[in-house]
Amino acid sequence: MSSRVLFGFHAVGVRLKTAPQSIVEIYADPSRRDARMRQFVARAGEAGVRLIEADAERLAKLAGTVGHQGVVARVQPLAQTHSLDDLLDGVEGPPLVLVLDGVTDPHNLGACLRVADGAGVHAVVAPKDHAAGINATVAKVASGAAETVPYFMVTNLARTMGELKERGIRCVGLSDDADKTLYQADLKDPLALVMGAEGTGMRQLTRKTCDDLVAIPMLGAVESLNVSVASGICLYEAVRQRGR
Image (cartoon, rainbow, N blue to C red; front, side):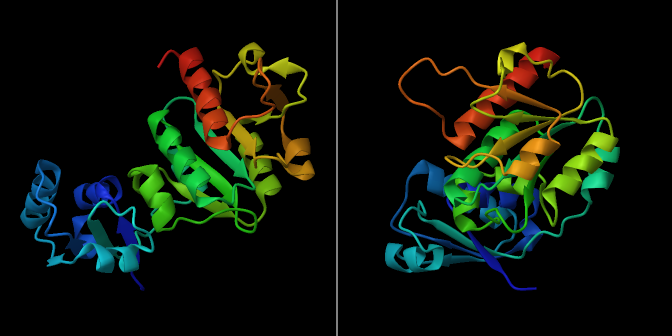
């Protein structure tokens, strides 16, 4: 199994906390001697992970960006231990799922995963052919959430949504031209919030498969929000209604 790269304190730190045995080695900038780096190096040492000194130039080459914060790790991919069905079978209380249709930008996906983790989302679902996969940039932006939120890429998104509906999970899509607002919708029951890509929105079949459509009220000159911001607003409205 080929290794992949994580970079940044949050992304590497969460892997160090949750699955240190999967870390092949960590590269750290020896010129950075602040408290955050000292604590990180100590944690890596306690976990028995191989630590290699590397300057900023080498770290940038490994990470593919200068935004590595002085920390880069080579890790083994974590096996997905559950299918979406198995995961939902084990959920206590009403499931909360985030469906992303056409989110191809790694920064947007990372931000969506981060807000999904914060809102207690049980799974994030996306199509295999119209979505970003998990890579180092996604993991960095997600600040560890790429390691904690199950992310399922499915062959047929509309069919998967149909299977969610068979489980009694309502699919509520966000659309600028919906007749009612997010705040008029009942989000307390089992729910899949469906978000489209910026600009194009949901694909037509995805839209048709939704049980209901809602809009976020836009009171200024801007016509739409970034998909991760919109996801956060919708998810936390569901959290508020559920009294969590």
